[in-house]
Amino acid sequence: MGVMTKAEYIESLRKLNPTVYMFGQKIDNVVDNPRLRAGIEATGATYELAELDDYKDLVIRQSELINEPINRFNGPPMSIEDLVARVKINRLLGKRVGTCHQRCTGMDCMCALAIVTYDVDQKYGTEYHKRYIEFLKYMQRNDFTANAGVTDVKGDRALSPRDQPDPDVYLRVVEEREDGIVVRGAKAHQTGSLSSHEIIVLPTRALKPDETDFAVAFAVPTDSPGIIHVVGRSTLDMRELEGCDRGNQRYSKYCPTVIFDNVFVPWERVFLYGETEFAVDLVVKFSAFHRQSHGGCKAGKIDCMVGAALTMMEYNGTQKAGHLKQKVIDMIHRAETLYGCSLASSYEGAEQPSGVFFIDTVLANASKIHEGKEMAEAIRLMIDISGGFVADLPSDRDLDNDEVGPLLKKYLVGASGIDAEKRIKMYRLIEKLALESADTVSDIHGGGSPEAHRITIFRESDIKSKKEAAKNLAGIRD
Image (cartoon, rainbow, N blue to C red; front, top):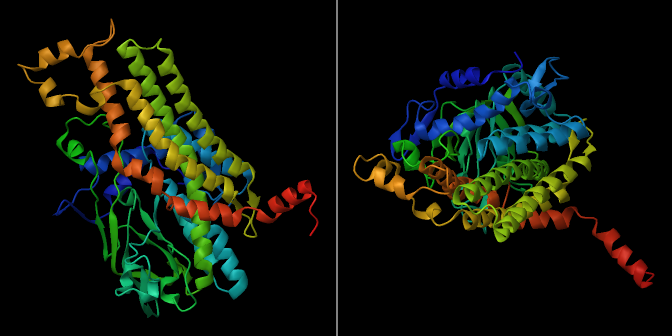
């Protein structure tokens, strides 16, 4: 098949039977739950774009493995053009859904595995890359979505995995069988795990030589026995469930904690087991790819925020205010800087021994540090431009009330010719763009903490050449 339609994607999720809990209740119907459906719709946009004539050429490419057209979200980059396309697609989707589309994390895992499994095989004569290629063909033929199971819950951050009072706080192998392995642990912040068909698990950190049980990478279906998805809270979750005051009603983000309670993984789905020195390579490769992804999608989200701010200026009658225009310009330059860093990291990419192309890690991490600081400023500027009703707009239920509703609509009109309904809808969207906590926090912590970004920049930068340049200019000869 190669490429699914959005409708086919939604129906494919109905065939799954994951174990899900939310607010203390077991959820049997994931697809039609209002809280979860908004997230599924965001991922659905990645399939929707592949159907639209305006975007097909960008979103679809030919697979060198199955010789069929595939969605780029299942195609590791085989050229600089592919690296650039990743960023462009993510910006397009960020602008389209105004939140996380949730599909890039799985793609970033597949990209990391495409490079590292080859390197492990070259050193140890293992068959991880062969297994990975067969898994990738499976993903491409079915056009499935993968979730990234990377972030362990970590327990005591001062202790390594082996020294934890409960070693299960880092996902690990607890049993080795003839036909596979059994794993136990939990992965946190699992964006879109229920919008996915597969979970790809990678180590979360560098490991010591004696921590072989933790050096594991694999893929399993999201509804495998023993996998439990516990959906986390969000600032606007009750609005989605109650169908009230939702703002952007079509798209949202949810982030479960996913528990692996003695989950069996067949050998053909195991892509690393015991080679501890390669755990850090998987982490670095995944993190760099994911930080590049962020630069595209968050630039697209700021595009939405700019559009909302400009529209609210029109609705409020402040479109000629020079100081507000300056604030819009400040928002735009933040988006373009993010986008520019991610594009630059793509253009400076290079081919790896596996044939897959990898980005420039310094530029990708520079983009992510910029995002962590500047997304918050872009939100502040959007709220500043829009006015105080972002904070305390009356409820939709009050607006629909027969007694008070007409009075509210009388007093919520904006500039001449702008009815209250339009102004209310735009305020709700702005409120959601500002307050959707799962997405706002990911601007800071997505793809690793800000300190991890800084460490990577220093480690990967060519420090020696910079010092030599300075000494040369100063006339110092060592």
